[in-house]
Image (cartoon, rainbow, N blue to C red):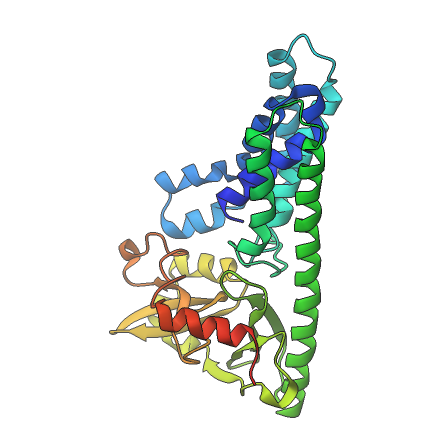
Length: 338
């Protein structure tokens, strides 16, 4: 999730778990610990973009990292707060919970999270939430503002914190329901259109979980499209087929960065040519305003033959071509086809 969400949610968890004993310092520890796994951003200062992609949400988002760091933070907190009546075990569990919530939330996005590093490079990705979803983040943000300005003697502090956490959990539950409904309906459409496929995924479009980007893979490429939870059967537009174009890779087949990109994309990729330059597309991040143009370029596009032009490769395509028309079309498409 985005950094602001981790900050406000971390503060709420800190208040709920340790606020009664530590006061507002619990919010500080919650913010610090909830944000700590993202310390891997420093890798970008000395790694090339491809290596950075694999380093981000890697070891610092693993269960082993949590097991190693939580006791160290507990030692620091134990010394800082003396004298106190909070046990070392209590501190360690508090910090472990904060980091665990962080890595579980990040696994709800498309990026993939290395829970099992360094023993396995498998990336966990549930495709339940867009990386920034206002309807998820607004509840802990409101609670955070209340907790920030309310006195420590305010009796309802813990209720605000727990309430925000419950609403976030409920929103994830709603995402599961929406995803299940979309997956079922898309597979029905595929059956009606006699589309065969070997793999499938769906992921939410930007800033919502009403409209989903769907991908069905076969041996030559992918059927892609968009499906709203409010679409009804026959009103669903036909899925659009895109070729994988693996034959384009012949000139760069031995490039080390290419093999790392294939691993990062979990095999969901196509190859295009932009002005005679080979481009690697990771389908998991969706299309630029694809709800308007089914042939739109993909958000994640890496210039294989121009590696120096790939800074901020994750962010650069997310909101490209967004204007009032695109936003209006997104809102209408979220409501379903009439």
